Amino acid sequence: MTGSNMWTDGNMLAGPLHDIFLPDVTAAVVGCRNCGWTGAMAEVRVFDHAPGVVVRCATCDEVLLRLVRGPGRAWLDMRGLNYVQLPMANET
Amino acid sequence: MGTVSPGFRGRRGRPSANLPPGQYLVEDFPVLSAGPTPRIDLDTWEFTITNETGERQRWSWDAFRALPSEAPTVDIHCVTKWSKLGTSWEGVSLDTLLEGVETSASFALAESYGGYTTNLPLEDLLDGKAWVAFRFGGEDLEPIHGGPARLLVPHLYFWKSAKWVRGIRLLDQDEPGFWESLGYHNYGDPWREQRYWGD
Amino acid sequence: MARAAVLGRLSWRAAQVLEVRHESASARTLVLDLPEWPGHLPGQHVDVRLTAEGGYQAQRSYSIASAPDGSRVELTVERLADGEVSPYLTDELRPGNLLELRGPIGGWFVWRSGDTDPVLLLGGGSGVVPLMAMVRTRAANGSTIPMRLVYSTRTPDTVLYGDELRRLAERDPTLRVELVYTRRAPEGREGPVGRLDAARLATLAWPPADRPASFVCGPTGFVEAVADLLVDQGYAPEQIKTERFGPTGS
Image 1: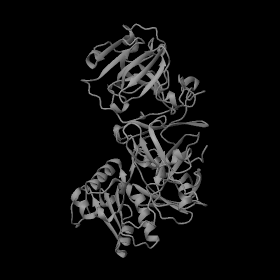
Image 2: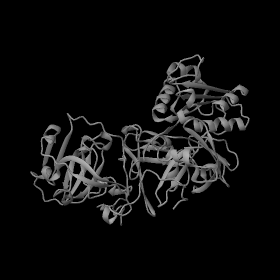
Image 3: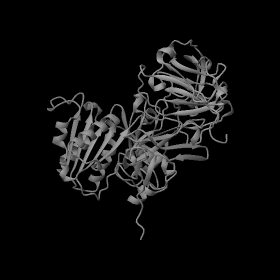
Image 4: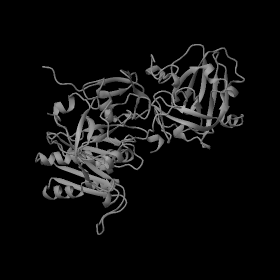
């Protein structure tokens, strides 16, 4: 395991972020506030060998999102995202 | 607690009386990282101390390595619950680095290549409590463990021992770092189990 | 059922191990029974959690290998030499044991049987597992949507599902399976040995004009290299879905 490969992709966010957001986020479209990249959340770089989950843009490496789980609470910082576009059921 | 998996031991050993509350002893040296391992060229590496008025002291790698160094053996405790006892390092004491620095600041912010930051009171860097370490276990510090140089502050949880450190800012006002701004305890004393805000 | 599979509540539950099946020297398939399993889409995974006496927990994600089949779910686990979780799953788990997991998880790297585009699956090593779920689901549904699986593996001894893939391809002309051996091929087999390259991929991949859906899965290096090759062949990034098995897969 090489040091620079400590990341996997956003497909694994579906588990930890499901506790926060009910709809699956891996199909969500997100935008990087730093470089403007947009794409599926499944395509981001997730560093989770850390005291928290750190999500970085695959294009510019800037932090998109951070998640810390503590006993009885979680902290979520999404300042690195321009937006999150979530697939939802159609409303009639 | 989840369903116990019969026979599963995991990498972590048993808790021990010598350890802070909630910690387990490990034999390996787990690698934790909030981002990719920065590629740092020793020709351009610098360590900078900036005081509260903006004055700077800067060392190149050669100048840094020419400073007197020490070989502390210390216990380290990660907030993710693993601990290693009796780890051996070589590094330059922050007492040495701060010797020529005039300051009345109370706080420090360590900054790293790659953007990571962590904060602590200035007094927690003094009096033999902290080093900028460049060797571990008798070998040059590997990049995945923070090489060429990392901060080493063993009396606090190990997220304060910033890997790939590039400098310390001395501040009049405390500034929470990367993890301290998102739920991790501002001080982080393992013996009082200060892991998260409010602990 | 698809909606429940993607939007349902995710809670930890205990699966019962029915069987531990030998797939290769280092891989085992865990056959699990999960009452009230809501079904799943091929490509989805589960999170598995192990708890030691004293409370220490370790958690990993594993792709579902099987097509939906009532309460039965199969996971194929590759034992990693210095893994913390995988050796327990391949060597210690016995029929009758309980295994805690949650799922199904993931709504992006999935294939839906209703999709009409031809499908290109590219798997490296254990990256073939979620792709096998897609092959099996398609077969179970009697679908004739054209599907090609390109499976890169080191030697004949490291192949997973070899016999089953051979049988499925033999009886179904709309399914094509191509094995790429990177270190050693079976005796007597013609063709190059080595990593998948642009020339070989060009003979295997659908032309971009056919609007294929492609799924690439495996170690990060494999996925990055193959995704680049597909882009070089004219695939639009939207046509390529990737899942990287990073260092968390131990």
